[in-house]
Image (cartoon, rainbow, N blue to C red; front, side):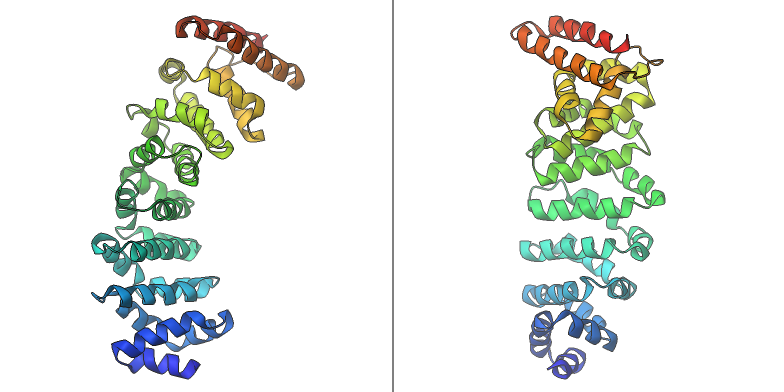
Length: 327
């Protein structure tokens, strides 16, 4: 059967190639890796250029099966010119299953460190940034697209390209309009935190960005809240005098205080650090962690008791209570 698959892919007609590609996905992982040594990647890439959706779909599935779990095959596939072909598919394909397969394929290829620079040197980053905000793309395709950008961004030299391609704005749009507790929101805000560690002003300069992040802190999953707090902390650390008032005006305090009590360990630490930055507490050193937790819990009780007070009055109360954290 393996010989038939190879022969059909290398010299068969299109119908035989389709059958061989389907059969390839049904082989064991060991068999697939063995066949990858026999020049079958090139004919599969040629099949991707077909105008027939079925041919493209089965070729993508076969290539995915070769790439999965094999760093060597991931490198081979990229060196063989897969990425430009995948870009063409993403720009022209209308069948959603093909788009999802293409996005998943890019994600797998980008997980290989040896591929990242070569992949980023194409138009891939710009195209992915443009695609993640499109309504026509499924949630899973968007998740995979953002995860691909995250993989590429682990190389610091690629982050400026991601920023220049408009990723901060695109990610904020995704976060703003999706379910804040979803995997999509988690992926988007995680990538955004990675970006602001290199360029905090790329987020703070976007109108409405702080409000979107405050909503993520209030409504997001534990991971989403953690990353959103990390972003605001980075923004505030970058230019406290400019950004402190902007963050406070967006009503961050209740959500931030809640995270400081029941967030993840990292989220709690960052929330408390941000709370101190929102006051003039630059010289503050924590002496008693337990007492600080108790103070935060007291602040939350005070906020609950204030209930229907107007926002300005509640903010004053919150700031007065937070001042206890600096004593």
